Length: 164
Image (cartoon, rainbow, N blue to C red; front, side, top):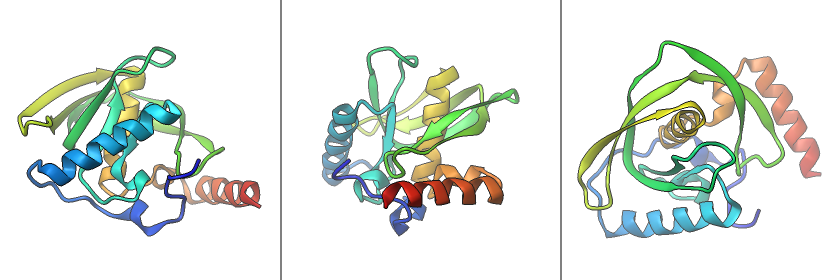
């Protein structure tokens, strides 16, 4: 997958601090949305394309449906369900690796639109999982950070072996 930052690139652990939406962020947003559409990703964060910007793109449609991308500038999880569920997660930055991660079954997220208007959106099920995953990435938390050390080390070994 040319063009995507690969694990363990340090940018995947970089925290993108919130800031007002400007022309540079809009440019990264357009590139991020094009990259997501190009590989039919359910979501991407700016770090995946090598940019430390507080920005993610998330498909709000359900799994298996046509992608319905939303650009989320300065995204945050405002509230989430106490109920949690495990589901498979992976990353364009670690192709071929998928592991079960526990996430809230719904999430209320806040974000700025391209026009800089603060808004909220409640997502459920798979879309909520994708949003939580990408917001983690905006905050410098690669999905493997949600695993025990043993499971994380196993996934990393499997990834390195697949890259040979």
